[in-house]
Length: 109
Ligand code: AMP
Ligand code: ZN
Image 1 (cartoon, protein in one colour):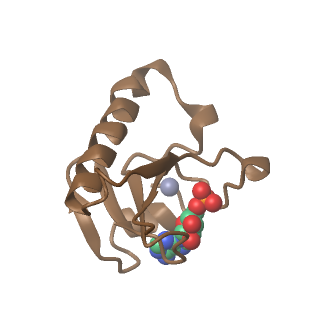
Image 2: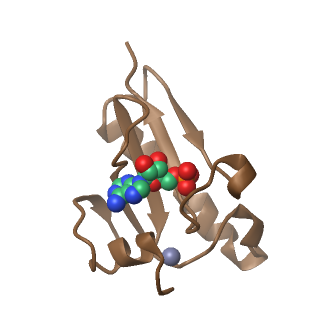
């Protein structure tokens, strides 16, 4: 848990948020400012700043993020219509919350 990290606070329930999914490794919740009809954030409980900070030992965690994204897309009914998966990396890449998260976007007509 990193002080002043918004997503650490959400993960540890210091800030209320409705989780669509939770297990020992991840939480999933809706983006507060959605850019698509379905916009979920897949967030590891472990604090990792960005993709730049991934280490070899995180390989399984990152793989699991995509498996969870696939599951959430199906649950949201957007797996057949299609969706985007996005990591923003550091400021120039549009990252504003420096706790790793995968955007799941879809549901357009
Ligand atoms: P990024 O630009 O990749 O760092 O994305 C951060 C995302 O977190 C943005 O799309 C924000 O809308 C979203 N966000 C910020 N605060 C919250 C919050 N309290 N609950 C849900 N999503 C949030
Ligand atoms: Zn954090």
